[in-house]
Image 1 (cartoon, rainbow, N blue to C red):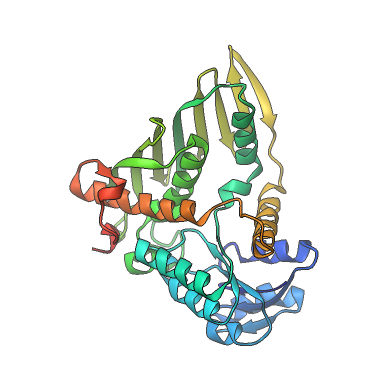
Image 2: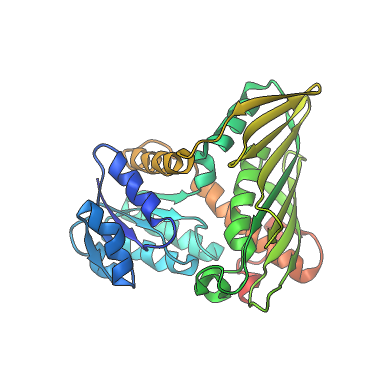
Length: 334
């Protein structure tokens, strides 16, 4: 499979190394508006470089593309790629509106091409270990989830497009919160039926920098998510409270089980965890193109966007929002 990478931003090298490490996969083209950024990723692999994604997808050099661009750009890029018969792996979030999610899916279905959304949480070893532990049943069923993640939304801390609602679809909740919603619903074991959220907008930027989300899942489990900018220390901890124990998963510390007063190490972190996760994600995409079900369904990917938008709606209205009741456009864009 010949793969083109559209967008040479923060995780581009991880996508490139993943392609290089898989048999029967080659990264053959890289596109970025900044030619030097594209060349930096492409040169070590002998890939072609482009500054317009339309030239890349029309070059005849690729069978599939990875869309690694600002969120609001996903829709048109997917539609254009599908029209040319190219399979697509899209970085999360799927899009910034549900209408765009549906248009992307319809275009790929109509063209007979495969689309997968890159929810990297499903491939990170510490989350995979937590999922496996839950599946074994040793701890009993989950009864609540707590997810706390720090980030940095100060001016200059990240690319300028992250601070534009029109391009990013929101702020910290659309970007970092989408990861938390993804993994909380996944490990919580059910879709969400109600969302309550509050947001804070600090540092003089145009998007929310912090937020708290409370989910009620269809299996009556509650999940609490906190996203905080510029915290005293970096935090990325997912905690699943079960009937007979507590599981924590943290990429810097590993996966642990606390049961009956004793703590057991389930998985210790490694410096290769993130590269291996990107490799596994790309392998999952290649398998999906060959007809296997992807580890992350499009229904789940759409639901993550739906929950971010519901969180914005709840924060704006100051009350819980039933997921099925909310409008199909983003409050963040209002």
